[in-house]
Length: 252
Image 1 (cartoon, rainbow, N blue to C red):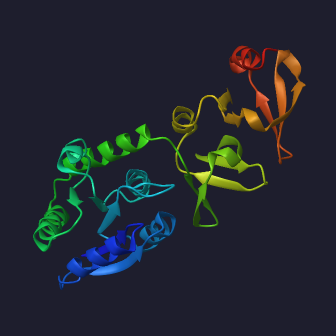
Image 2: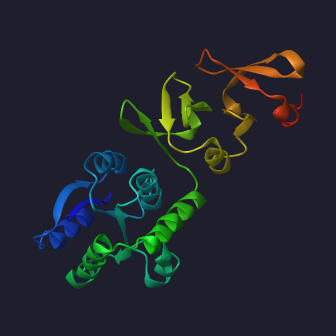
């Protein structure tokens, strides 16, 4: 079994490594304090399982797990947490297992056995439901940083830096105010539901804009508008289906 460990605390990583290294059939591919680096390694090496700390800055374990499962649905997720037993009850259905800190060899063994059982099972329907639950829970959380792709690398993008998002070739193109362009495997509808509605506005079926980054509003044909956005040469259209809401937004 090949595994990757992710915990922003060094002690947590070392303890996990200590207990898991006792199993001859477990190969630890990597240990990471930074979930961004961990995601890249997960996609490159495709481990059987990932042990993820829940509480991490910028991207927590739920968000990291959801990102993993979008592309690598066969990877098994084990959450690691310092939450007490009562808090764990709220998450029990959303992963293969939860391991409470401080760890014990007995508890680690239970988790390892569960992974092995799933790896050998032909019926994956129950695990598929757990995957969906992880992704559902992640969508409830406020986006702090967005995992995005460029040149086969993963970056964490701050929503504040986004100028606009557009639908392009089956992906979402994310353009920032400094002229950078990234891609995401999520949909515009996903971002519309997750981003701060006080700042982000769906102005077209193919565009979401950061209203704070509008430099100029240019009247266009059929009573629509073109938008010049901060830091970018591209103009973003406001379609007729969204014009009434757009005018209301800016009291035009």
